[in-house]
Image 1 (cartoon, rainbow, N blue to C red):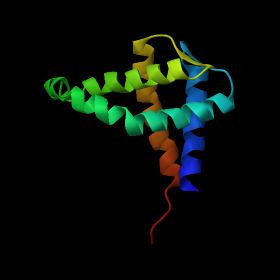
Image 2: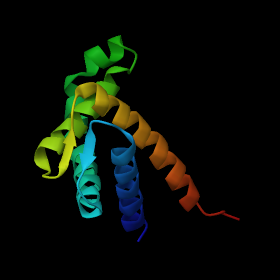
Image 3: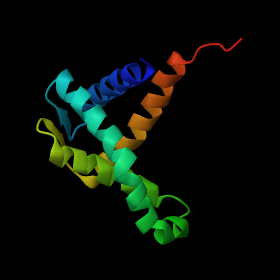
Image 4: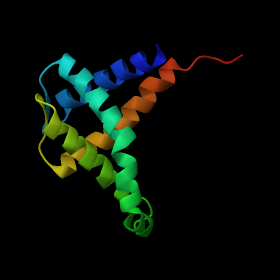
Length: 115
């Protein structure tokens, strides 16, 4: 249940950011749900492989290259999903940063007191 709620919150964040950022388009909320699922799968399977292959440049840039990897994952999702588009790599970087911030805010609302 928690996973479904997190997917829906991520879809909400994607939909909000698509309406705020120029250069990011999402046609419907159903597309935003599909984007959140695909981003989760890409982050689960593709991102670790990219991180391992680019480990030297990631260490050299003190981890800042991970922003580019995140942007590449978002651009790949834009190529895979009909109805979701990102105009440039810099828009994808900004989208990635804002999505992470918005997700952390929304996920913090889910946390329960463990008393």
